[in-house]
Amino acid sequence: MARTAALQRLAEFRDGIALVPADEQGGPWTTQLHGLDWICAFSDEEALYRFAVARGEAGRAWPYRRIKGARLLDEVLPALDFPCGVALNAAGPDGAVFPPVRGIVPDSAALDGERAA
Image 1: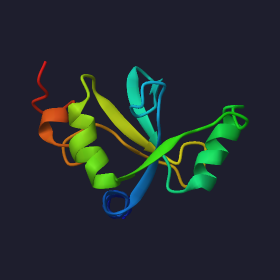
Image 2 (image 1 turned 60 degrees about the vertical axis):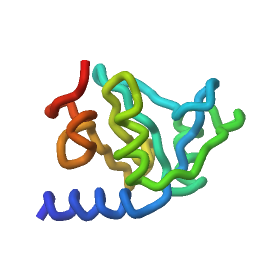
Image 3 (image 1 turned 180 degrees about the vertical axis):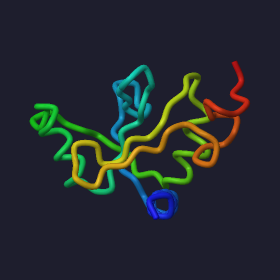
């Protein structure tokens, strides 16, 4: 049952549009947790605002780009020169993580795949 729910959540993310905050260079804003980088993505502006409040940064601008979830997983992550997953709606009750593993990202970007060194 839990696996089915996780697969459904992944399918919904891939089909949907995510808001991805930009860093100072215009790339996707990332954070590190337990030695792995994560792109923080949000389903809507309310979820992004919740995250900013939780970080104590609600007063600053959070420029973002809208990107299809599938493009984020299939194109953006493999283009990075470091392993990275996606944290969806961090600091919210409906958060989810999509780690860089086979079945979520292309094998070339997966930690358990054939990622180029």
